[in-house]
Every structure is written in C-alpha cells, then in structure tokens.
Image (cartoon, rainbow, N blue to C red):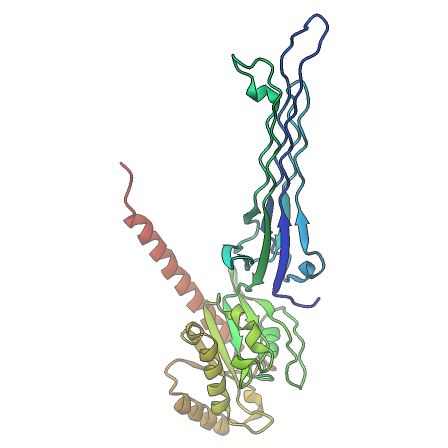
Length: 354
C-alpha cells in the first residue's frame, strides 16, 4: 500500500429531526390536547485513533463522510430516534486541521482516542413543548438544526522514539532490518526507501522502542530536491535522532562532508530538529580495515567538531548494533523517568481547592 501522509476530507454531521404538531384523538376524549413529540438529535462525527492503520491512503478514495440525521417526532409524545454517531478510524499520530481557517482541532496520539470534529444537529421541538395556560392547543413546532459541516486536513506524523537520518544508501534500511522485524526494501541504488518505515526494537522484557526510517536526504532537499524533505516532519515527534554515515561511500565522497550536508539541510528545514539529541553512527565498517576505520572516524569527529558518543557498526553483519540499541534504550528510559518526575513535580505544585 502506498504511504500517504496528508489528506483532505469533508465531514457532515446529521441534521436534527423535526418536531411535529399532533393532538390526542381518542374516543370519549374530545379535547385530548397536544401530544406532538420532539425529533431526534443528529449524529456527530468523530475521528478515532487506530493502531492497526498506518497510512491515510483510504481517504484518497472516500472524501466525504456523513453521519445519520435524527428522525422526526410523532404523536403520543414519541421522540424521534437519534442519528447514529459516525466514527472514522485514523492512524496514531494524525493531526486534524480545519482546512477553511487552517486551525488545529486536535492530535490523535493514542489508540482509541476520540475527537469530535462535527457536532450533530439539535432536535426540533414538538407542539407539546409549547403548551401553556394561555395556549392550550399550540400548533407550533420547530425544525431540527442542521448538522455541522467541515472540511478537514489530516496530516500524519508518525510516532517513533528514534528517527534515522542519512544520505541515500547510507544503510538506514539495512539497520532497521537488522535491529527490528521491519522489512524495508534494500538495494544498491539510491532512494530505495520511498516512504517512512517503522520498526519495533525489542531490547529486553518490557523494554522496546519504535524506530522510524525516512527517505534519504540529499543536498538541496530543503528546496525540494529528492524525497526526504517531505518526510522530515515525521521526525518532529522523535526523542532521539541517529545520524547514520556511510564510512566508505561507493562514489568516493568525503563522509564528513556528507554528514555536514545532512546537518545543513536539517537546519534549513527546522532549527528545532537540528537541536534535537543526536547520535553519530558510522556504518559499513566491514568495508575498511581497523586502521583506516580509526583514521576516518577521527577525521569525521574533527571536521564536525563532534562532542558526543560515536558508534561504529556494520548493519549488514550486525556488528556493534547490540551495544547501540542497548545505549539507546537506556537513554530513552532516563528521558522518560525525567519526564515522569517533572510531571509529578508539576502536579504537586498545583494549588489545591479549599
């Protein structure tokens, strides 16, 4: 299935049912009075997070979604049936915008989360509602109000703990295949990754994280060249970036200069992304001997003025990958613990109501 990360749809909530004018007519009760019932409420439209969906592709074929309208009331003060609410499943990580005013309505971040995007119409009133001491036989009723209509823009930003950065053919797809059960396409030509791939990396019991691979970034990507820039938004939610560098490029290019290209394009797209925590990973170490590897490693560190840890791996042979994923898991757990402590402190500092 083709990966689609943006879609525009129309949602129409159900109209409220009309109230009715009716009078009680029974033998021996000549003046039974009004008994017209109210209409039913119109159904509302909700978007619901579903972890079994990972693309917005279905919305390319069906663009309009309509909830049921309420049924009109009837005599004997019988209220019309309300319209059924409409629930539309969307992937986790979907941002919902009102397309007419470009306003963010909500963000689907967990399975089963519901966000109302169109309110159903209110029911009309039957003539029973208008009976009073001075109006014993009202002949008035009201129509139901129309359901809300909206044009929505859906934008998917995949939810992952770790995002992969690198030039085409840096070995990102091979890496995600080697550490998870994801099976992205791998080949010896550029741009084999045409859409984001997600993989779950299991480190131990109850220890796992989600990793996202996006298409490779090339020079000029921030101005529209290549494929990767349109998917960089998927890295916005990640906690950590892995910058994977091909230590032995087949075209003879300088690995350090290749790394600088990625950083420049990342900064051109979003300064927040370039400031995100990042690990440097030198891949394809099986293609060079130890002496050359050490020389190239030191050269990259010097040219990038890199202060953080550097990992040397061969994603193909899985050399060095165990230590890398273990260290990633440790860092993520530390970050989560800090977040829990911060949330707890914020809760404790909130004033209590007397």
